[in-house]
Length: 513
Ligand SMILES: [Zn+2]
Figure 1 (tube, rainbow, N blue to C red):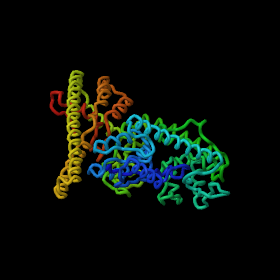
Figure 2 (cartoon, rainbow, N blue to C red):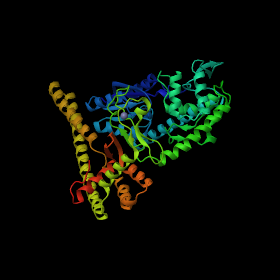
Figure 3 (spheres, rainbow, N blue to C red):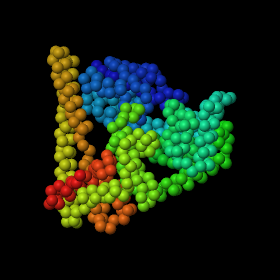
Figure 4 (tube, rainbow, N blue to C red):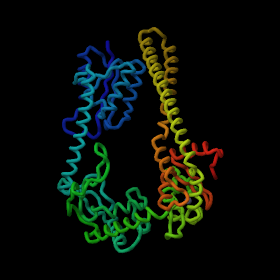
């Protein structure tokens, strides 16, 4: 008699949807189908979560039971119970078949693999249209001036004639009004505004002071002027993430009491866009090490979540002079990394880059050939290893199924089975771990741009802009320990090129520092 396991799944985002099939109803239908197919139900598994998430704890348990040979077939209410994303669903199906169990549907034809694939695709389509229906529901609410989700700081959600609307939070609103007024009237940066808001007592929902980024978002949030604007960004579930064009936004004016009058709000928007325009040019042109440099003295201090945080080193000051400073020192005064002259540090970094990459075109060409050969060798070795491991994984899985069958037919005693089974399981774990730890493709793709950039560089008369481009291309990060003590971590591809160049330059290692 065929031994069936029932697998049930209901996703959180569809439980409230009319017409959804409850876990009990799914199970009843599955049991009926098993009886019809003259089988017996030996186990039941259920997961409650979204089908687009791959990790389903009980699915994993089901798979283990199949691998132990306890189950001949898995039955689901509909194939879309199996995973809403066709790739995931088909993979899961294949995995179980490899372990020796078929996947059947209680309500759909299941013997034809082509039809099964089709049903997976239909399930995915349906999930997509559910998401669209949810979005259009949110849009309708927004049009009617109703609020969905968490309210922004300064507001609370109130039920009013069956509608959810925003009401002013009397504790926070004055602080937010003050923040907007300061932003409108003064030339303070976002960081300074955040500091002042913190001093005034503005706190986020978690009780922590509001960050610079959060202040930026608040100052741009039209909710504070009484508007609801819905759909400024796409969530990226089925569509690419990003901003929607303005004409697609849904704007509901005067949806709730404003904290900021519209004149002040508009003035703040003008100030912010002026800031951005100015800062944009600063960031593009001024400092060689912007966004690349980190403080080497703060990096080992764990933050509130226990994770060591790397503090950036920022450039400050005027065009000709200027200096670099640890951002932690700038904000809290807690770092002892000295302030470093920009000219000196830039010069030292440039020297180090030139020492690592400035070679004759002949050496460069030899390096390019060397890298190409090495990459193709490494790639085929990795592929071979992957193939071998996959083959032995298959073999161990087969052995496992055989073992279980032999136990079932009383060909081996329980304790022998246990011992052998444990051996197989350990071997499989080891292989899976090895497979997972195999490196991805060597960084071949990015080697080309590095070589191309190096071939057109004339090192003697590089402009600042060229140095900046080169630094961004080659350097992952620079950790700064002291005025003349720093470490450059090159991008993986740049490092491949650097190693090849130094190997082939004939001078042995030309690494400095
Ligand atoms: Zn520091």
